[in-house]
Length: 420
Image 1 (cartoon, helix red, strand yellow):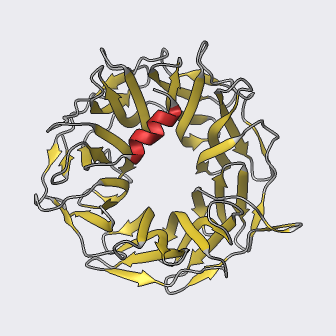
Image 2: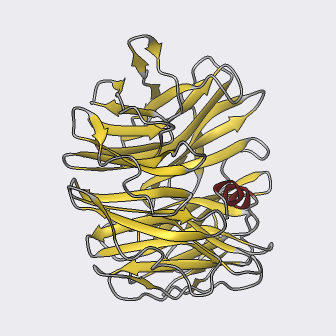
Image 3: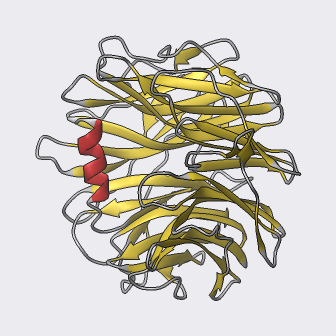
């Protein structure tokens, strides 16, 4: 499956799947169906945040209508209305508690405006996000450090689809305030897709060939190493810095792995471009990263040989990236393609990854695996009903071994969830 075909499949969202594992540890976990009220339907869930075992909020849509779903400890149900039908698009969510969540995205009306919504435990409030005086603005990601400090990033432009500049704004618990992302020549061009904050005075945001840092006073663009076709997709921060991963151009039409590290003063290549590539691969893609420290990172993704996709997991030990296990060791027997989409690590010997695999008949099935320090072990995940099943986002509750994954399933009908 080519990267373009994969993106096309993900875009064709029909149905929803939610899974939960109560033992996301070194042992094999069993993921089972979590109950729902059977009236909650959606085309797909794209983001989830679980501040506790008994509470999660997930964002999705049902046709043109944005929706959010709440897990209350016993069942999933459609929460109060959020956004406007035919107008609102939900991109990211960050929850501090069951009574405090912030969601961001954009509203479409003669262009697009950056938008945000606040959850108070029973209803969503439409907030007045900061919007530059441009026609096409969007917030793509949000991270809350506390109820009085949340950072959101995205882009703004006079034109649809091009001419974007980096957008950042802060929520102080009552109002949104724009934070200029300016360089020596004025506003910085580019789109910010991900943000990570260690505190209210230290955040990093990345997107494409752009990185910017917040020092508690202002956002500043940060120089990146010159890389052919470099694109940063995700970022993970720790006490002494941050690691960002993505892809670069191979120069022959394919993609290579890319990892860069921020040490508090500058970005540098964490290892040579393509050092995580698989021998013989046409494309090697790193999709997500989780770091416990500067010398302990796990990255997951996929590689392909022009026809099939295979799982890929690698670890950073402070000096080099190494295959965490043999190439494709997370593959499902008989699968044509196996893809990992999201990862969370509690320690170097405790990681959970979610994704999907498909058969020769092109049906997709849910996939979750656990890293026990020496190998990836496939968890048991049901794929009820007919059609394809995909897991695309993951939230692990702090201080526990409970993880919740969301995605989508083929065929219309009520959402379903799984737990062990």
